[in-house]
Length: 233
Image 1: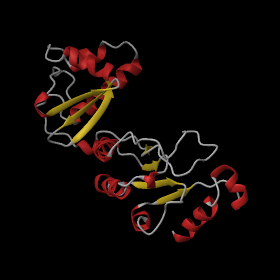
Image 2: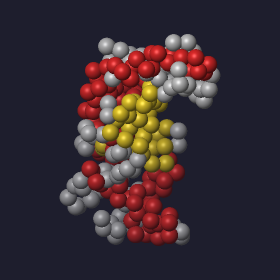
Image 3: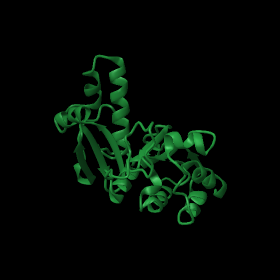
């Protein structure tokens, strides 16, 4: 990246989406996203096409950490094709990598009423993301290249599109280490094949050492269902 180049945003291939003080920049040709705060994006938008170079823009920030951060953002955006450049295209696969786990709360619905639940989950909750919205979230997550994805809730298996979502994650993120966090009571013949075949790790939550102790917090019959799911898996 030549810091002496002037800042010009290449809007031809971009879709800019603003929500909740964040800006998602999507390159239609590359099929890739980058997410940044609206405050930072406004800096770039405000000087777009005004003859200011990257070097001049960076030096407007006095704090060294701010300068370092802005340089990183410029590098990411250059790789995404946001700025006009005479150089060859950057490899988007090297753009960003958070190297962390991402937890996807698939739903707040749950088939249990555990006394200790910190999320106030219940069967009457309404899913805040439909199938298409979850897939769009996965598209954005794929740009961040996390090491793990954890499907949690509520109870993820209560969703009718659970198998579709798992298959989509595998399609978009390939060999990502995929973890399912579940109470285990909904594992059955309709979903066990996709769980065994496409989930790398299953975390089954259970409280108590037997039916009597577990039923105090999770309800009657939960212990046997969870243990049965472990054996079935």
